[in-house]
Amino acid sequence: MTILADTSALLPVLAGNDVDHERCRRTFEDLARANDLIAHSYVIVEAASLAQRRLGTDAVRTLLAEIVPLIEIVFVDRELHDAAVTAHLAASRRAVSLVDWTSFELMRRRGIGIAFALDTDFKQQGFRTVP
Image 1 (tube, one colour):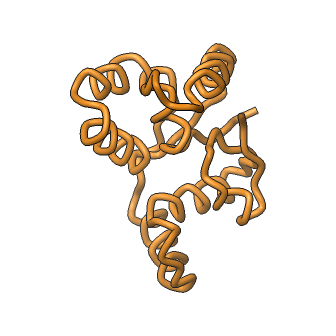
Image 2 (cartoon, rainbow, N blue to C red; image 1 turned 180 degrees about the vertical axis):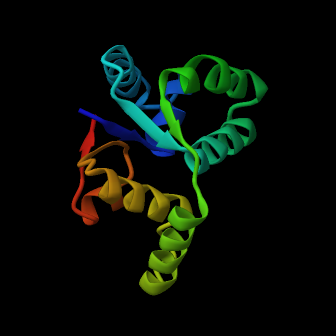
């Protein structure tokens, strides 16, 4: 079963002092062991940027060298980008990012029903989340 990895769950994996660290770390390890994780390139860029700003360069190194290689990466093409932009603009919801709309579009296109995410927007879009 394929599960989309979101920044909201990847960052706690990196942050040992985060209240969600242990449950996200355990879930990530289980999903990675089962080879079930997928993400798109915008998630990786977002996660690297936030990790650098919030956690420092060591966290970025861990993300890019140890975590990302365990995730299948889908590079966002023009068609997926345009669909996400259209959905983002149509929704006019300030709290939901273009990265999230890209995730929702990719999940619908691939028939993915579960996200490794702490972001409640996935549930509002009809997806399940873990942990």
